Length: 275
Image (cartoon, rainbow, N blue to C red; front, side, top):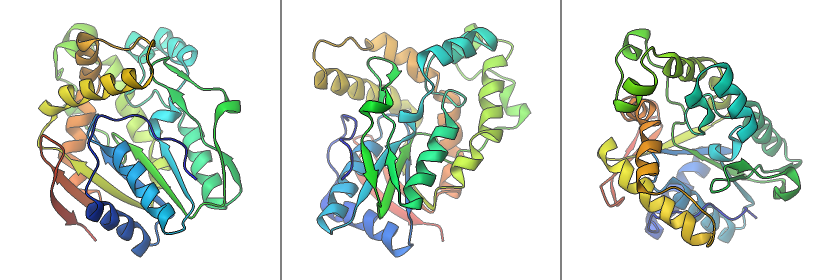
């Protein structure tokens, strides 16, 4: 049985679409089926629905997010002091425990008992292993994340800042260079463990700030009394993701086996298969 998914502001997908996604995974014998999508695009919602539908068919399913494999706050603080202050903020490439994600997927594929890491976004900390759900002998793992299989940029593409945050806080490119090297060197072993990738393709990055704000409000509503980000904080947070998000938009349609176009309201508009 999958652990409870993270709260999401996205509305539920139609049952026939969810069934089509599950059928795509099963018909291609994907043990680890990946769902990529920019912040707030509905990937967690889709993963939860596919898992529920798979359970109705009698399958044992694990749901894991790359967000659950963030480095802890102390580790990121050390990285921020050693390399660049922006690395203290979770999210961009280079702020994940990639080895943990790889080991978890390997354990699920091997069929033994596995603990699934979980990250508390409002508390900005990875939960202790004693609070990680345990699973054994799963038939399918759904792995979701915002930049899965996104390739690194060229050095020439890194030169110009992409937004005001980069211009003001990373003028010499140290932060974005570190994130880009992580994309090129640290993440490919994780990408190699993903049997098939579906990309929820939005009309453009301009929708992400509103989607992420909706997601933040859903997170806070699910945990009354916990303090999260305000609207300005979300706007700043999203700018940390802009460079790699735009790279994902440009490159993933040619990389993902399935690209699903969604509109500004996250309604499915098209399904394209690259096999």
